[in-house]
Length: 404
Ligand SMILES: [Ca+2]
Image 1: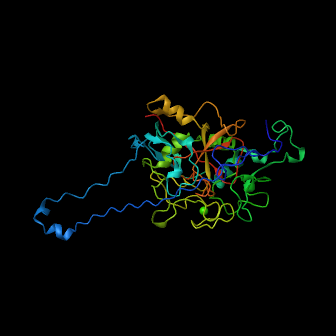
Image 2: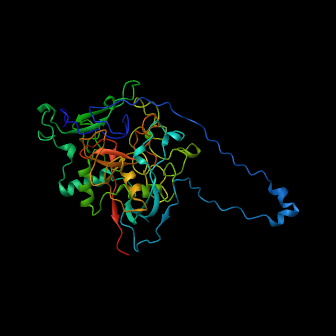
Image 3: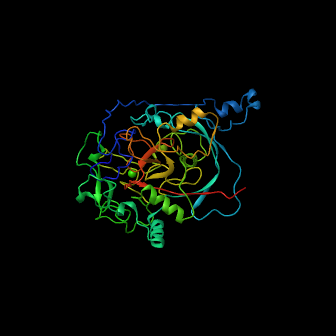
């Protein structure tokens, strides 16, 4: 049964709980007490080079140990494929070797800055193999999407008025084209209902990400947003590409590392340096932009990951081709062995929102914060109703490798 209000469903990031509560039927999940602990690892080698050089035993001193990546079970080592296709990379794409890796996330509440959401849909951590593929180095930009629209005349879902068939009980005055937009609240609010900061704005679309008074002038190199899943699929098809599966996306995001919390390692801000565009300040009141951006950022403003991909954490969520089910990882793990090129479940089902069809989102956004949502953590999962766009949701594409 559809809502009487023609909201296309709101997005992932600012959401009271991961079990996606329906737009108008949210359930409050009280804050768990945050478990915050400091982990101090002080490995100090005290022997002095001077004294050892002057020791009779020093003649046999071993070579410095090679740095070996520490793998924490249940994660196992990433085993990348050796194959790389000959020739130049397609424009704007980088080669992702594929291979075998451990997919999923430990309970983030056990991590420093892990937030309060245990995210059980990202477990069990299981072994997956994906073939190699090309991947867009960046999220699809406004400039790229504009070329697609100019070439095809494509009209996005947000630009079309919801129909009576979609929302049979909605007042006619509510059947107006638009999309979901984040608006800061004037002051602190309970984080139990995302209607407090998300709203359906008439006239919001990819050219007007925050509503009819906004535009994308001077923002050619920003990620396109306000694109629903069918819009992203249409772009990909036009570009001779496709959307990534969730497994491809996560393999790529990990950049060759194994079981790290973030795409770059285990420290959110190594050496105090921000590595992704996320949210600082009091959510959802004031984004202080300590990472350099209060709100969306142009693409590639932070370091690339190990495969040369930008913004695989934060900035905008990214659509994947998999239907969403919270128990999909359990299904794969129960099947045993290594899941080869998993394509997602056959259909969508979200127990917290059973009437909606959802696809997987990955990567988190500029609205993610440990006060609310830490899905910039690389093994975590998001989801979104297929026809719902938002001003923090975009995508990037992949292209299969030529045959060996
Ligand atoms: Ca930011």
